[in-house]
Length: 395
Ligand SMILES: Cc1ncc(COP(=O)(O)O)c(C=O)c1O
Image (cartoon, rainbow, N blue to C red):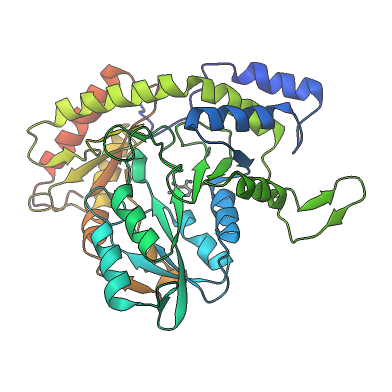
Protein backbone atom coordinates (compact mmCIF):
# COMPACT_ATOMS: atom_id res chain seq x y z
CA UNK A 1 0.00 0.00 0.00
CA UNK A 2 1.32 3.38 -0.96
CA UNK A 3 1.05 6.49 1.10
CA UNK A 4 -2.39 7.97 1.79
CA UNK A 5 -3.06 11.31 3.44
CA UNK A 6 -6.81 11.61 4.07
CA UNK A 7 -8.73 14.85 3.78
CA UNK A 8 -10.23 14.76 7.25
CA UNK A 9 -10.66 11.85 9.64
CA UNK A 10 -11.92 11.69 13.22
CA UNK A 11 -9.53 11.57 16.14
CA UNK A 12 -10.29 9.32 19.13
CA UNK A 13 -7.25 9.75 21.35
CA UNK A 14 -9.15 10.48 24.55
CA UNK A 15 -11.85 8.91 26.72
CA UNK A 16 -14.17 7.93 23.85
CA UNK A 17 -14.08 4.16 24.36
CA UNK A 18 -14.29 4.48 28.14
CA UNK A 19 -17.42 6.64 28.08
CA UNK A 20 -19.16 4.66 25.32
CA UNK A 21 -18.47 1.40 27.22
CA UNK A 22 -19.85 3.05 30.33
CA UNK A 23 -23.05 4.10 28.52
CA UNK A 24 -23.49 0.54 27.22
CA UNK A 25 -22.86 -0.95 30.64
CA UNK A 26 -25.46 1.34 32.16
CA UNK A 27 -27.90 0.29 29.46
CA UNK A 28 -28.61 3.90 28.47
CA UNK A 29 -28.08 3.90 24.73
CA UNK A 30 -31.03 5.81 23.35
CA UNK A 31 -32.44 9.31 23.92
CA UNK A 32 -32.20 9.19 27.72
CA UNK A 33 -29.09 9.03 29.90
CA UNK A 34 -26.60 11.09 31.82
CA UNK A 35 -24.16 11.71 28.97
CA UNK A 36 -26.71 13.75 27.02
CA UNK A 37 -27.23 16.14 29.93
CA UNK A 38 -23.49 16.23 30.56
CA UNK A 39 -22.72 17.09 26.94
CA UNK A 40 -25.35 19.84 26.95
CA UNK A 41 -23.95 21.34 30.17
CA UNK A 42 -20.32 21.11 29.07
CA UNK A 43 -21.09 22.62 25.70
CA UNK A 44 -23.07 25.48 27.26
CA UNK A 45 -20.16 26.13 29.61
CA UNK A 46 -17.64 26.05 26.77
CA UNK A 47 -19.70 28.46 24.67
CA UNK A 48 -20.58 30.74 27.62
CA UNK A 49 -24.25 30.28 26.85
CA UNK A 50 -27.09 29.32 29.21
CA UNK A 51 -28.68 26.41 27.49
CA UNK A 52 -27.92 23.91 24.71
CA UNK A 53 -30.12 21.18 23.24
CA UNK A 54 -28.25 18.20 21.81
CA UNK A 55 -29.77 16.56 18.74
CA UNK A 56 -29.23 13.93 16.06
CA UNK A 57 -27.42 16.04 13.47
CA UNK A 58 -26.53 19.55 12.45
CA UNK A 59 -29.34 19.34 9.91
CA UNK A 60 -31.83 18.51 12.69
CA UNK A 61 -30.44 21.44 14.70
CA UNK A 62 -31.00 23.78 11.76
CA UNK A 63 -34.47 22.41 11.13
CA UNK A 64 -35.48 22.88 14.78
CA UNK A 65 -34.12 26.45 14.72
CA UNK A 66 -36.16 27.10 11.59
CA UNK A 67 -39.33 25.69 13.23
CA UNK A 68 -38.73 27.70 16.39
CA UNK A 69 -38.08 30.86 14.34
CA UNK A 70 -41.64 30.44 13.08
CA UNK A 71 -40.75 29.89 9.43
CA UNK A 72 -43.97 29.01 7.60
CA UNK A 73 -44.90 28.05 4.04
CA UNK A 74 -44.42 31.01 1.72
CA UNK A 75 -42.00 32.88 3.99
CA UNK A 76 -38.70 34.02 2.54
CA UNK A 77 -35.39 33.07 4.17
CA UNK A 78 -32.11 34.61 3.03
CA UNK A 79 -29.39 32.00 2.59
CA UNK A 80 -25.85 31.49 1.27
CA UNK A 81 -25.12 29.80 -2.08
CA UNK A 82 -21.59 28.56 -1.29
CA UNK A 83 -21.86 26.10 1.56
CA UNK A 84 -23.07 22.59 2.31
CA UNK A 85 -26.66 22.13 1.15
CA UNK A 86 -27.83 21.09 4.65
CA UNK A 87 -27.73 24.77 5.64
CA UNK A 88 -30.50 25.52 3.15
CA UNK A 89 -32.61 22.34 2.94
CA UNK A 90 -34.48 23.10 6.21
CA UNK A 91 -35.95 26.16 4.48
CA UNK A 92 -37.59 23.74 2.05
CA UNK A 93 -38.66 21.41 4.90
CA UNK A 94 -40.78 24.36 6.08
CA UNK A 95 -42.10 24.97 2.54
CA UNK A 96 -40.50 28.40 2.67
CA UNK A 97 -38.57 30.11 -0.14
CA UNK A 98 -34.82 30.65 -0.07
CA UNK A 99 -33.20 33.69 -1.69
CA UNK A 100 -29.47 33.34 -2.25
CA UNK A 101 -27.23 36.23 -1.16
CA UNK A 102 -23.59 36.32 -2.26
CA UNK A 103 -20.58 35.70 -0.01
CA UNK A 104 -17.58 37.94 0.55
CA UNK A 105 -13.92 36.89 0.54
CA UNK A 106 -14.40 34.95 3.79
CA UNK A 107 -16.96 32.73 1.90
CA UNK A 108 -19.51 33.94 4.49
CA UNK A 109 -22.52 36.14 3.68
CA UNK A 110 -21.67 39.58 2.28
CA UNK A 111 -23.19 42.16 4.64
CA UNK A 112 -23.26 44.90 2.01
CA UNK A 113 -25.19 42.74 -0.41
CA UNK A 114 -27.60 41.65 2.33
CA UNK A 115 -28.24 45.31 3.14
CA UNK A 116 -28.67 46.18 -0.57
CA UNK A 117 -31.09 43.31 -1.10
CA UNK A 118 -33.24 44.34 1.87
CA UNK A 119 -33.19 48.00 0.92
CA UNK A 120 -33.47 47.82 -2.87
CA UNK A 121 -35.44 44.65 -3.56
CA UNK A 122 -37.78 44.49 -0.57
CA UNK A 123 -40.41 46.68 1.10
CA UNK A 124 -40.28 47.48 4.82
CA UNK A 125 -43.21 48.90 6.79
CA UNK A 126 -41.19 49.43 9.95
CA UNK A 127 -42.07 45.97 11.26
CA UNK A 128 -42.08 43.43 8.48
CA UNK A 129 -39.77 43.11 5.50
CA UNK A 130 -41.47 41.68 2.42
CA UNK A 131 -40.14 40.44 -0.91
CA UNK A 132 -42.68 40.38 -3.74
CA UNK A 133 -45.40 40.43 -1.09
CA UNK A 134 -44.00 37.54 0.98
CA UNK A 135 -42.64 38.04 4.51
CA UNK A 136 -38.84 37.86 4.79
CA UNK A 137 -38.47 36.24 8.18
CA UNK A 138 -34.90 35.07 8.70
CA UNK A 139 -31.34 34.86 7.48
CA UNK A 140 -29.08 31.80 7.70
CA UNK A 141 -25.47 32.79 8.25
CA UNK A 142 -22.86 30.07 7.84
CA UNK A 143 -19.42 30.46 9.41
CA UNK A 144 -17.64 28.67 6.60
CA UNK A 145 -14.67 26.37 7.31
CA UNK A 146 -14.22 27.77 10.83
CA UNK A 147 -14.04 31.38 9.74
CA UNK A 148 -16.52 33.91 11.16
CA UNK A 149 -18.96 36.01 9.18
CA UNK A 150 -18.96 39.77 9.75
CA UNK A 151 -21.47 39.42 12.57
CA UNK A 152 -21.37 43.05 13.71
CA UNK A 153 -22.55 44.27 10.32
CA UNK A 154 -24.93 41.35 9.70
CA UNK A 155 -26.61 41.64 13.12
CA UNK A 156 -27.18 45.33 12.64
CA UNK A 157 -28.94 44.69 9.31
CA UNK A 158 -30.98 41.89 10.87
CA UNK A 159 -32.08 44.17 13.72
CA UNK A 160 -32.98 46.93 11.32
CA UNK A 161 -35.26 44.67 9.29
CA UNK A 162 -36.55 42.43 12.09
CA UNK A 163 -34.96 39.28 10.73
CA UNK A 164 -34.29 36.24 12.88
CA UNK A 165 -30.65 35.21 12.65
CA UNK A 166 -29.88 31.50 12.45
CA UNK A 167 -26.14 30.98 12.75
CA UNK A 168 -24.90 27.80 11.14
CA UNK A 169 -21.81 27.29 13.27
CA UNK A 170 -21.53 23.63 12.30
CA UNK A 171 -18.00 24.20 11.01
CA UNK A 172 -16.95 26.80 13.56
CA UNK A 173 -17.25 25.24 17.02
CA UNK A 174 -14.72 27.09 19.16
CA UNK A 175 -14.23 30.06 16.83
CA UNK A 176 -14.64 33.34 18.70
CA UNK A 177 -14.17 37.07 18.30
CA UNK A 178 -11.06 38.50 19.97
CA UNK A 179 -11.60 42.20 19.27
CA UNK A 180 -14.39 44.66 18.63
CA UNK A 181 -17.92 44.85 20.03
CA UNK A 182 -18.34 41.06 19.93
CA UNK A 183 -15.03 40.26 21.67
CA UNK A 184 -15.11 36.83 23.40
CA UNK A 185 -18.39 35.82 21.69
CA UNK A 186 -18.33 32.37 20.12
CA UNK A 187 -19.68 31.50 16.67
CA UNK A 188 -23.28 30.42 17.20
CA UNK A 189 -23.92 32.57 20.28
CA UNK A 190 -24.47 35.91 18.58
CA UNK A 191 -27.67 35.47 16.57
CA UNK A 192 -31.07 34.23 17.72
CA UNK A 193 -30.07 30.61 17.15
CA UNK A 194 -26.74 28.81 16.82
CA UNK A 195 -26.45 25.34 15.29
CA UNK A 196 -23.55 22.90 15.58
CA UNK A 197 -22.72 19.59 13.92
CA UNK A 198 -20.77 16.63 15.25
CA UNK A 199 -20.66 14.73 11.98
CA UNK A 200 -17.59 12.54 11.38
CA UNK A 201 -15.68 15.23 9.52
CA UNK A 202 -16.26 18.04 12.03
CA UNK A 203 -13.75 19.28 14.62
CA UNK A 204 -15.38 17.03 17.22
CA UNK A 205 -17.64 14.14 16.35
CA UNK A 206 -20.36 11.97 17.85
CA UNK A 207 -20.59 9.90 14.68
CA UNK A 208 -23.63 11.91 13.72
CA UNK A 209 -24.98 14.60 15.97
CA UNK A 210 -25.62 18.27 16.51
CA UNK A 211 -26.74 20.90 18.96
CA UNK A 212 -28.72 24.14 19.10
CA UNK A 213 -28.36 27.11 21.33
CA UNK A 214 -30.44 30.29 21.37
CA UNK A 215 -30.34 33.73 22.96
CA UNK A 216 -33.41 32.79 25.00
CA UNK A 217 -33.08 29.81 27.33
CA UNK A 218 -36.83 29.05 27.18
CA UNK A 219 -36.53 28.73 23.42
CA UNK A 220 -33.84 26.07 23.87
CA UNK A 221 -36.10 24.22 26.32
CA UNK A 222 -38.87 24.27 23.72
CA UNK A 223 -36.47 23.01 21.03
CA UNK A 224 -35.49 20.13 23.33
CA UNK A 225 -39.19 19.37 23.84
CA UNK A 226 -39.83 19.36 20.08
CA UNK A 227 -36.79 17.09 19.56
CA UNK A 228 -38.28 14.42 21.83
CA UNK A 229 -41.61 14.02 20.03
CA UNK A 230 -43.11 16.90 22.05
CA UNK A 231 -43.88 14.65 25.00
CA UNK A 232 -45.92 16.49 27.59
CA UNK A 233 -46.34 13.42 29.73
CA UNK A 234 -43.73 10.70 29.35
CA UNK A 235 -45.81 8.07 31.11
CA UNK A 236 -49.21 8.64 29.56
CA UNK A 237 -48.13 9.73 26.07
CA UNK A 238 -49.62 13.19 25.94
CA UNK A 239 -48.37 15.30 23.01
CA UNK A 240 -49.62 18.87 22.59
CA UNK A 241 -47.53 19.71 19.53
CA UNK A 242 -46.11 17.96 16.50
CA UNK A 243 -42.66 16.81 17.58
CA UNK A 244 -39.63 15.23 15.95
CA UNK A 245 -37.36 12.31 16.72
CA UNK A 246 -34.30 14.58 16.73
CA UNK A 247 -32.88 14.06 20.23
CA UNK A 248 -29.25 12.96 20.50
CA UNK A 249 -28.70 9.47 21.88
CA UNK A 250 -26.70 8.72 25.02
CA UNK A 251 -24.21 6.69 22.95
CA UNK A 252 -23.54 9.67 20.71
CA UNK A 253 -23.31 11.94 23.73
CA UNK A 254 -20.79 9.63 25.44
CA UNK A 255 -18.54 10.10 22.43
CA UNK A 256 -19.29 13.82 22.47
CA UNK A 257 -18.31 14.33 26.11
CA UNK A 258 -14.93 12.71 25.42
CA UNK A 259 -14.44 14.71 22.23
CA UNK A 260 -15.30 18.00 23.91
CA UNK A 261 -12.56 17.36 26.46
CA UNK A 262 -10.12 17.31 23.55
CA UNK A 263 -11.48 20.29 21.62
CA UNK A 264 -8.85 22.83 22.81
CA UNK A 265 -6.06 20.45 21.76
CA UNK A 266 -7.73 19.82 18.38
CA UNK A 267 -7.97 23.57 17.79
CA UNK A 268 -4.32 24.03 18.75
CA UNK A 269 -3.27 21.40 16.21
CA UNK A 270 -5.51 22.80 13.45
CA UNK A 271 -3.98 26.25 13.99
CA UNK A 272 -0.41 24.93 14.03
CA UNK A 273 -0.91 22.86 10.87
CA UNK A 274 -2.57 25.74 9.07
CA UNK A 275 0.44 27.95 9.85
CA UNK A 276 2.79 25.36 8.39
CA UNK A 277 0.74 25.11 5.17
CA UNK A 278 0.84 28.92 4.91
CA UNK A 279 4.63 28.89 5.21
CA UNK A 280 4.96 26.16 2.58
CA UNK A 281 2.70 27.92 0.06
CA UNK A 282 4.14 31.38 0.79
CA UNK A 283 5.26 32.93 -2.50
CA UNK A 284 3.86 30.06 -4.60
CA UNK A 285 2.49 31.61 -7.74
CA UNK A 286 -0.13 29.00 -8.65
CA UNK A 287 -2.05 28.87 -5.40
CA UNK A 288 -2.36 30.55 -2.02
CA UNK A 289 -3.90 29.66 1.31
CA UNK A 290 -7.18 31.43 2.12
CA UNK A 291 -6.97 33.29 5.41
CA UNK A 292 -9.26 33.70 8.40
CA UNK A 293 -10.52 37.02 9.82
CA UNK A 294 -7.84 38.83 11.79
CA UNK A 295 -10.16 39.79 14.69
CA UNK A 296 -11.05 36.20 15.59
CA UNK A 297 -9.49 33.16 17.15
CA UNK A 298 -10.57 30.60 14.56
CA UNK A 299 -10.82 26.85 15.06
CA UNK A 300 -9.24 26.63 11.57
CA UNK A 301 -11.29 23.53 10.89
CA UNK A 302 -10.75 23.22 7.15
CA UNK A 303 -8.02 24.56 4.87
CA UNK A 304 -8.61 26.12 1.46
CA UNK A 305 -6.13 26.72 -1.30
CA UNK A 306 -7.15 29.21 -3.98
CA UNK A 307 -5.86 28.10 -7.35
CA UNK A 308 -4.54 30.77 -9.70
CA UNK A 309 -6.93 30.34 -12.63
CA UNK A 310 -4.99 32.80 -14.81
CA UNK A 311 -2.27 30.18 -15.01
CA UNK A 312 -3.75 26.80 -14.07
CA UNK A 313 -6.18 25.61 -16.72
CA UNK A 314 -6.69 22.01 -15.57
CA UNK A 315 -10.13 21.24 -14.18
CA UNK A 316 -10.64 20.59 -10.47
CA UNK A 317 -11.46 16.99 -11.29
CA UNK A 318 -8.14 16.58 -13.11
CA UNK A 319 -6.20 18.15 -10.24
CA UNK A 320 -7.98 16.05 -7.61
CA UNK A 321 -7.46 12.83 -9.60
CA UNK A 322 -3.73 13.51 -10.06
CA UNK A 323 -3.35 14.16 -6.34
CA UNK A 324 -5.33 11.03 -5.49
CA UNK A 325 -2.78 9.03 -7.54
CA UNK A 326 -0.08 10.46 -5.28
CA UNK A 327 -2.03 9.48 -2.17
CA UNK A 328 -3.20 12.99 -1.34
CA UNK A 329 -6.93 13.27 -0.78
CA UNK A 330 -8.38 16.66 -1.63
CA UNK A 331 -11.80 17.92 -2.69
CA UNK A 332 -13.38 20.77 -4.53
CA UNK A 333 -15.41 23.28 -2.56
CA UNK A 334 -19.17 22.67 -2.85
CA UNK A 335 -21.15 23.10 -6.03
CA UNK A 336 -23.31 26.23 -5.71
CA UNK A 337 -26.60 25.36 -3.99
CA UNK A 338 -28.59 27.58 -6.36
CA UNK A 339 -27.34 25.37 -9.21
CA UNK A 340 -28.60 22.12 -7.62
CA UNK A 341 -31.77 20.68 -9.09
CA UNK A 342 -34.12 21.48 -6.17
CA UNK A 343 -32.95 25.12 -6.20
CA UNK A 344 -32.39 26.07 -9.83
CA UNK A 345 -35.56 28.14 -10.03
CA UNK A 346 -34.94 30.09 -6.83
CA UNK A 347 -33.95 33.77 -6.75
CA UNK A 348 -30.28 34.72 -6.48
CA UNK A 349 -28.96 38.17 -5.66
CA UNK A 350 -25.78 39.46 -7.30
CA UNK A 351 -23.78 36.24 -7.08
CA UNK A 352 -20.21 37.10 -8.04
CA UNK A 353 -17.81 35.90 -5.36
CA UNK A 354 -19.58 32.56 -4.83
CA UNK A 355 -19.13 31.38 -8.46
CA UNK A 356 -15.61 32.84 -8.48
CA UNK A 357 -14.54 30.77 -5.46
CA UNK A 358 -16.54 27.69 -6.51
CA UNK A 359 -14.13 27.34 -9.45
CA UNK A 360 -10.95 28.01 -7.54
CA UNK A 361 -11.00 26.45 -4.08
CA UNK A 362 -9.33 23.17 -3.35
CA UNK A 363 -9.73 21.81 0.19
CA UNK A 364 -6.59 20.08 1.41
CA UNK A 365 -5.86 17.54 4.18
CA UNK A 366 -6.67 18.95 7.60
CA UNK A 367 -7.04 16.08 10.08
CA UNK A 368 -5.75 16.75 13.59
CA UNK A 369 -3.48 13.68 13.32
CA UNK A 370 -1.67 14.84 10.18
CA UNK A 371 2.09 14.95 10.76
CA UNK A 372 4.48 17.74 9.77
CA UNK A 373 6.12 15.36 7.34
CA UNK A 374 2.74 14.63 5.74
CA UNK A 375 2.00 18.34 5.40
CA UNK A 376 5.32 18.76 3.58
CA UNK A 377 4.42 15.83 1.33
CA UNK A 378 0.96 17.27 0.58
CA UNK A 379 2.29 20.76 -0.22
CA UNK A 380 5.09 19.38 -2.40
CA UNK A 381 2.70 17.25 -4.43
CA UNK A 382 0.08 19.95 -4.82
CA UNK A 383 2.82 22.26 -6.14
CA UNK A 384 4.06 19.58 -8.52
CA UNK A 385 0.58 18.84 -9.88
CA UNK A 386 -0.25 22.52 -10.35
CA UNK A 387 3.12 23.22 -12.00
CA UNK A 388 2.61 20.32 -14.39
CA UNK A 389 -0.81 21.64 -15.29
CA UNK A 390 -0.01 25.24 -16.23
CA UNK A 391 -2.08 26.09 -19.23
CA UNK A 392 -2.59 22.45 -20.19
CA UNK A 393 -5.14 19.78 -19.79
CA UNK A 394 -3.25 17.33 -17.57
CA UNK A 395 -4.93 14.17 -18.76
C1 LIG B 1 -22.36 24.29 6.76
C2 LIG B 1 -23.01 23.03 7.20
N1 LIG B 1 -24.31 23.06 7.55
C3 LIG B 1 -24.94 21.95 7.97
C4 LIG B 1 -24.28 20.75 8.08
C5 LIG B 1 -25.08 19.57 8.47
O1 LIG B 1 -24.63 18.91 9.59
P1 LIG B 1 -24.95 17.34 9.75
O2 LIG B 1 -24.14 16.59 8.76
O3 LIG B 1 -24.54 17.06 11.16
O4 LIG B 1 -26.42 17.16 9.55
C6 LIG B 1 -22.92 20.67 7.73
C7 LIG B 1 -22.11 19.45 7.83
O5 LIG B 1 -22.36 18.34 7.56
C8 LIG B 1 -22.28 21.84 7.26
O6 LIG B 1 -21.00 21.81 6.90
